[in-house]
Length: 93
Length: 481
Image (cartoon, rainbow over all chains, first blue to last red; front, side):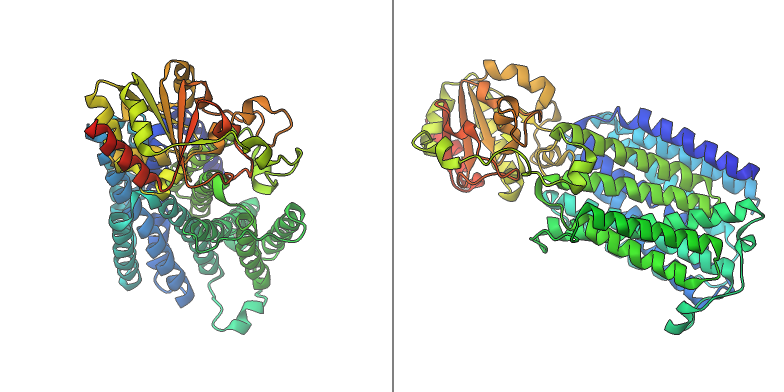
């Protein structure tokens, strides 16, 4: 139970931090912000690795894990690459 | 590996994500921010890989290879005009990943998995204590249920958003009963979550959650289209983050919670910004029909005999003597791929000493910041892209406004016609400028289905035709003058 409360505290504080950070992003960067946060949400890859790599689990778990790893990897790789492509265009003057 | 070390690395990854988003607050630091964020991701993944004690890496390797190839091909080949589609797909994949992770965790704890279709309807003798002691087990099951629900809605909702943006699905369909039908689906899905929490061994409940949530995602997004798309994409972006944070609760994983809640708030704030820019509530965008309310306005009455059309050469003559020009782009510029042509016109004007700025409405295009990315691609300096609040007071001192592919966001009815569906929506006051040039294919109405009195004003010239072609002709005429 203690751990759950700690996780909840982490969640709530992150939400407040998120509001503070995101409201400072200028409208001109809103599209890179969306693709960039898409890449960040690919952090589910961490959970996906745990599922795909669990030994002795039913095969279904590994298959679900494989799907999760694939989707999350697309988010991570695709998200960061496309964000970088866009931001590079903003950088040059 | 020592779990303390793992959690410490997760903390570092979380800090790097935060610094990454902080970098996005300025165009100059944005590239570095993105790199920091990617570094955080790399650290989190590597430490996780070192931490799992597995002998069989085949599923992991297969997933990373397939995902890596698909992701990089998408990212490197996508055109900037199609960025809304790409973001919609990524939202969906994020939701799908959370969905499958929660399902995998569910079946791992159950220790058995259905081997055949018939097994999905089996009931296992298992209660919530398998998921945690006392109330913890119940909370773990609630987290799994909600992750599955939100993940599945995000997945199918985003796929529909993608097919609408890609114009694979052109019509809008909805459930009979509209919002009530959707509400019933949501209530039924939540009831299935409750059943699953009470008796996790009852696999039918889990199957029902997945099925209802997948359908709910379809029905939520199918009726929405066109100019409302930015709101939907931002909202689905938020859902994908919330699903990731919930998955963090399922797995007790700190970095998932930090990252997921950052993404969740980001999407919500963007949703809020879009709604304010359209003067509509979120409920109205999701469930309302825009044209509802307000008397029918006869377009012929507004346009008859009052619309003046012009050739690009005539516009060039007008531009020649201007001192300040503002370009107002909309979705039509993206459709016509005219961003490079627009930049060249601006260059031609600037070499003549004419001041050029761009007026960007928050909901121009199909996603937040869509126009900015297109113009950045055409190497327009971002300082020249001016937000609505800052550009509006300058229109009175502007000699020529060129509106290309924008309609509703310039409609003065939003300011003047009380009772009009768009009344109260903040617009770009282009009609205050000395001259207005509107490049458009025809007089057809925009997404709101309303005629635009701007087109009939005395100081407005309509240039009919393809946006790119018209702009190129203006530039050519200007350079010859």
